[in-house]
Structures are given as structure tokens and as C-alpha cells.
Amino acid sequence: MPHDHRPDHDRSDQGRPDQDRLDHDHGGQSRSHHGHHHPQIKEGDRRMQAAVAVNLLLTAVQIIAGVISGSLALVADAIHNLSDALSLIIAFFARKIGRRPADAKMTFGYGRAEVVAALINYTTLIIVALYLAAQGVERLFNPAQVEGWIVVVVAGVALIIDTITALLVMRMARDSVNIRAAFLHNVADALGSVAVIIGGTLILLYDWRLVDPLITLLIAGYILWHAGREVGPVVRILMLGAPEDTALDEVITALRATEGVSDLHHLHLWRMQEHETALEAHVVITEGTDPQEIKDRIKAQLFERFAILHSTLEVERDGAGCKEAPLIGH
Image 1 (cartoon, one colour):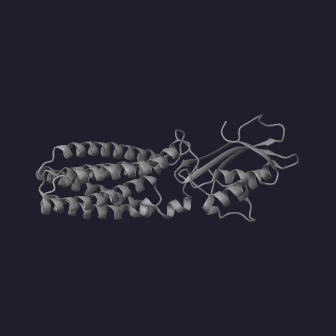
Image 2 (tube, rainbow, N blue to C red; image 1 turned 90 degrees about the vertical axis):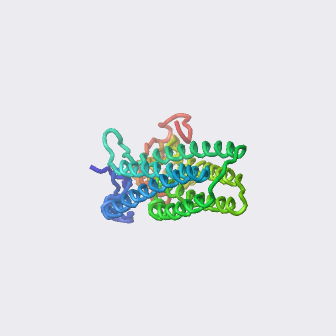
Image 3 (cartoon, rainbow, N blue to C red; image 1 turned 180 degrees about the horizontal axis):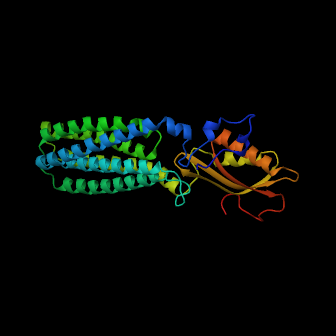
């Protein structure tokens, strides 16, 4: 039976937030929302399967062409493309696991499966980029002959496939760190293909063989920059860090300013999963204040101002609670 994140004040009729916005299931999605978007979920799964298929086909073509032409940049782009295909596979299964409801083993649900998948994908991407960088440096000192036409043609095909793949997952990328990672990888692949096309053209026109390893290093550098920028928020969620889009100081100020609240301590703010923020705190109330009324008031404020739906509040009487407790943490 689904748990209810609704603030206690939501249970009567006056001045209450829309129940559909608050009545959530174990996965952090509203029951009406989940049911309404069931066809979209299936469509999203089909799009990801198609993206995986075209990426695996492209990877095979690029590797064969890279070996025949002697282009390290083309092989580098193929390896990157393979990592994208694998990341899409991981993202696909993590997406399915993340839709499972909470149970006795995972009382918060399985939503973090997508965050874990994103961390795996970014870590793998960093390793691949470091390997490509090492290969590029080695080829700088030992440049090899590259067949420019093969490089240009195959990279052109890759650019088309990468663009198609990005379009397949672009819509889903807006709401999922997992799918967004796969989408941005394909954008990076498309840019890499553009770089390879430019390099192949320069080899054809001027026989600049060093341009191949130089472009390989540029692709590796871009991958490292991209993965390094995106992995931080993923680690933040897994480390139970406070959400970047919620100002903790503002939350504390708002709670302390609530009528009847004299103090606040043992506060924690974190994401249970990517789109569900949670808060717990000890709230010290003044003498003569109704504890339930304070809870209702605080939960309403947390929802209306900060979109925090899941809150756990322990109410203490002034002078009878925790002694010398820190404001944040234990």
C-alpha cells in the first residue's frame, strides 16, 4: 500500500494544496501521474532500445573502418561510441529497476538505481578518456599513415547516427540524471565526429598526420571535462548531500521564523532519490503551543516554499529537549 507524503494539514478542506500533487507512491511519482504517463514510459523504453541498437551497429562499423584506415581518432570515436551504447544499456535497466515500488528491503524505493547507473557510466567514461589520451600522446611521437577518405566518410555516418541517438533520448534527458548522461554523451560523440571529419580533411589536403592524435587528445579532453562536471551532482545525491537547488539557509530561516518555534537542531536535508527531497529535524516549541499545529504549519511551508514533500519532525518542549545539540547533523 503506498505511503503518503502529504503534510498533515492536507487532510482537511480549507487552504490545502492539490491532493494530486501530494499523493505520491513509493517511487516518488503521483499515482495519477504514473498512470497517465504509462504509455510515455513504454515509448521511452522503445526509444532507448532503438538508440542502443544504432550505437552498437555504428561502433562495429567505426572499429572496422578505423583498423583499415589506420585512424586512431576513428577508433577513439568508436570506443567512445561503444561506451555510450553500454551506458544506454545500463541506463535502460536502471530505469526499469527505478520504477519498482518500495518494499521491505528497499523502504525508500529503488529510485537511486538510476543515480548509481549514472555514477558507473561517468566513471567508465573517465577511464576511457584517460586511455585515449595516453594513446594519443604515444601516436604523437610515432605518427602513422591514415587513409583520410575512409575517416571522413565513416565519421560523417557517425555524425548522423549520433544525432539520431541524441534526438531519441533528448526528451527523457530533461528529468533524469541517468538519461541526461547518455544524451550528453551522444552530443559529445557528435562533436567528436565533427572533429574527426575536420582532421581527415586536413590529412587529405595537406598530409598532416599529427592532426589525428591531436584530435584524439581533444576528444579525450572534452570527455574528461564533461564527465568531471556531471559526476559531482551524482556523487552529491549518493552522499546524501543537501540539494543544490534548495537553499539550506533559507529553509532554516523559514522554520525558525515559524510562530511557536523557539529553536531548531539535528536538521538533515537530502534527496531520497533524484526528484524527491526529504527533511528531518528536531523542533523546539514555546510553552502553550500545540505540537500538531506546529507540524501542520511547518509541513505546509516546506511544501509551498521549497517543494519538500517528505518531512519528519520531532517536537520538543522548550527546556526539555536535546542539550547542546548542533543545528545540522548529530
